[in-house]
Length: 488
Image (cartoon, rainbow, N blue to C red; front, top):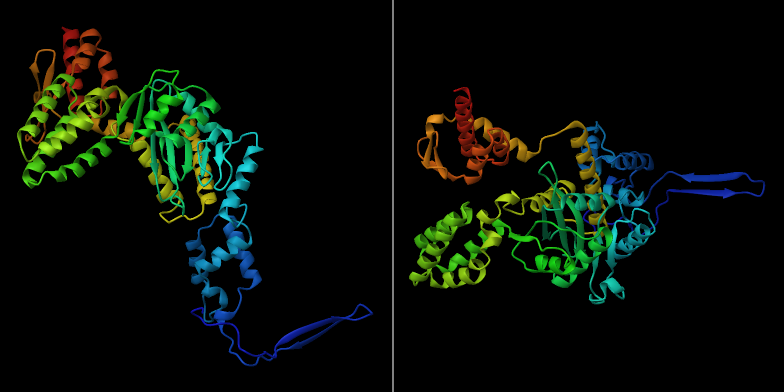
C-alpha cells in the first residue's frame, strides 16, 4: 500500500471524455466534468505533460536533481499544484522514461553491459580489453575463469598511449577498491605518474575475482593491446598477486623493483602490534618501526634494523611480534624501507587512492551506485576528463599539487637563518635547527655533496628534487657559500 493511499475508489467516477468518429468523418465528443466518489487530491494526479517536458529538457542538459527541485519549490505561489509535490522518485521516472540515463542499453544491467561490449567491439576505438559475462562460456583468453565469473577489462586509446609513454623506467601503481557497483565486484586500477607528478589511470578491470589468475588475464590483455612494458618500480598493497602476475605476464623484461605502499605497511604493523599487551611498550615499538621505515640512509637503516629486531627478541612481551616482523618484513626490506626507494619519489599508493576518492566522491557524488553499466560509463567519462585536463596543462600550463608544495617549502626555507645550518661530519652530514628551537633535522646528503663539489649550478637542480624545507635551507646556504667563494 502506498503511503498516500491508492488511486482506486472501488467504483466508477462519472467524469469522462467519449469521442466517436462518425461515417461522415465528423468527430462527436461528449464530456462529463462532474467527478463522483472521490476527492480531487493532488497526490493522485499525474504530473502535467508540459511540466514533464520542461523537466526532461533540464535533465538532458545535465542539470542536477537538487537544482531542479529547488527551482520548482521556489516557484510556488498562493496555490499548490501537482508539480510542487515533485520528488527525486519522480525525477528518476522521467529520466528513465526519456532515456537520459547514460550508458544504459537495457533495463536489465547484465544485458545492458553485454550490449555495450558488443557495440564497443564493433567500434574502431574499442576500449574493451577482454570480456567474460556471467553464465557465458569463457573465451580462449578467459578459459581459466569459471562460467559464473564476471570480468571486463577497459583501456581507452588515450590510456594506452599514456601507459606506453610514462611506464618506461618509471613507476606503475595498482590497487583495487569496492563500492563502485551493487554486486560487490572489485575495481582494479592501473595508474602511472605523468611529467606533472600527477597520477593518470591507464587501465581498469572489474570482476568478482581478485586472484592471480584474473590479474594475469588483465595484464596479458594489456600486453596484447600495447606490447611489452618495462617500468623501474611497481607499487601495490601487501597482496602478492599484483606483482607476481606482472612478472609472469611481462616475463621477457627485467622485473621492476617491488614497492609496498607505506600506508598499508603501517596499517599491518599497527594491526599486529595488538599482540603486544603492554600499551606503553606497544607505543615504543611502533615509534621504533616508524623511525626504521622513514630512515633515508641505507647504512644507518641496517644498524637500526638489527638493533630493532634484537630488542624485539629480547623481550617476552614482543617476541611474538618479532617472529611476525622477521617472517614478513626483514627479508623483504627493499620493498618497504624508504632508503631503498629514494629515486622513485613515491612512498604510498597515493595516486591510486586519490583516483578512487575522485571516482567515489565526485563522479559518484558519494552515493551508492548499483548498476554496473553506470559504473563503466562514469569510468569512460573520467578517462575523457583526465585527457582534457592534461590537454589544458600542456597548452596553458598548470602546476600540480606536488610542485605547489615544493614551492611553498622552498619559500619557507628562505626564512631559516643560515646560522641554523651546521656541518656535523665533513662531507657526509649536516644539521639544520628548527626555527622554534625545539628540533634538529639531520640529513645525510652524499648526493648533495657530489653536486656541490662538481658544479655549483647543480645545486638548484638537486633542490628541485627535495621537498623538505630544511633540505632546501641547506642548499641555499651552500649556494651562498659558492657565491662568496667565486667572488673571492
